[in-house]
Amino acid sequence: LDVRAFRWLVLSAQYRSPLNFEESSLNNARKSVQRLDTLRTKAEEGKNSAIAPEDEERYDQALKQISATIEKGMAAFTAGMNDDLNTPRAIAGVFSIVKAAEQISKKNLLIGEVAEMVLNTLDNLDDVLGIFYEPSGFEVVKEKKEEILNIDELTEEVRALILQRQSAKASKNWEEADAIRDQLQSQGFIIVDQAQGELQVKKMA
Image (cartoon, rainbow, N blue to C red; front, top):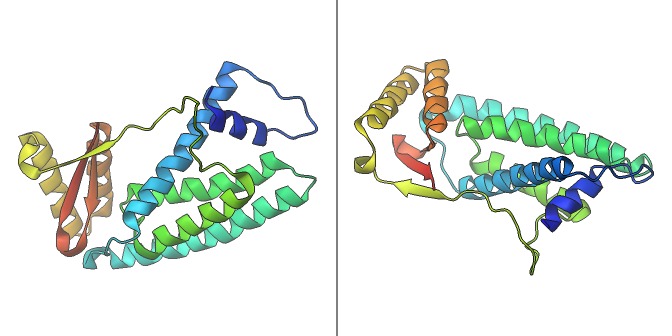
């Protein structure tokens, strides 16, 4: 039994209502926990990353967006917990923050202060929910690991897409750059923008 998934399943139900325990419900709870774990990992990885000069305008927008979303989401979380421990309402507030942070991560902007804000929020939520821990003696479903690749390990097709994305970013064609990023992600490649135009390429292992 994935005990963290079971804990999330219980938290997701109103304590005055019967718990509908089915395998599908447990699987959905497991996916929610994995989303939280993945977001926390990405924020940890990005908190020390620098902002590329060409991304400063988009980063400022992301910072404003996540700040407003966290404020609103935490208010919803607190209101839910104060409403006779209405945890489904409270968790809806949590995932409004998670969804916004995931969108920012897809744009490779979950770095620096944005990442720190997300981590602090997850820590504050965990003080109440107690999800981020490693239970001993139980099976825990792990997320796939990411392998960092050298540019010469990539196929010509992937290298061409990366160069095309860099060109689109240099021209501030964010729509095209994001579309190429999504195309690469669908193939299992994650592109991490770093300072001074450098890139890090990761492959889901």
